[in-house]
Length: 204
Image 1: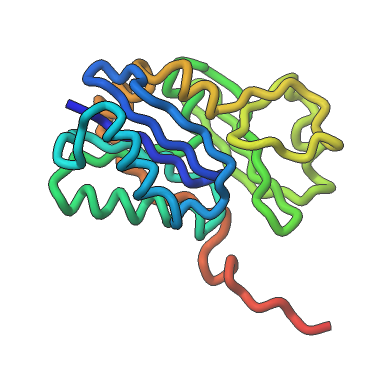
Image 2: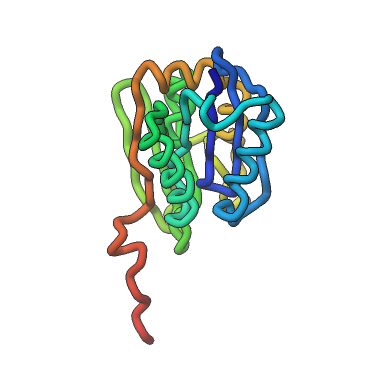
């Protein structure tokens, strides 16, 4: 049976996997408005492998971190597949290194509004926080390398950069096996509560 991978948290990435979670197709697109092309691209990718929507047995969604509108596209599609009885799984980019066996590290990405999201983990400990641009460098003072699902401000971060999209691409069998075994279905991850995300700017 065929599985589908969708990531709309940062541009659009779609992949088709075989029963062993090896890629049949994998496409990283520069398309920022994924809602307009995602159905067409999935259909074309399935046709390439002589499959149809009814042949999909599992769907995997990278459910953030990302913009509210971007993440909602993938989650919305996942809910439709789930409603149709397709096994639906979701995870967050900052969990990818842990899922493939990295015991400790630091994930960083832009949270927009001049803020950055940082996730640190080590054995048995996790810490998530939002920091300002001014606080970012101090927060990463003891970090030699970091992970991210997109490039953050390179003027601030002169450290080694590990792209979690590349980790997903290179470790699909291990990653999706563990996501499946753990029955991961994590809600979309937004950087702020919606009341703060859509708060009107104060007039000056």
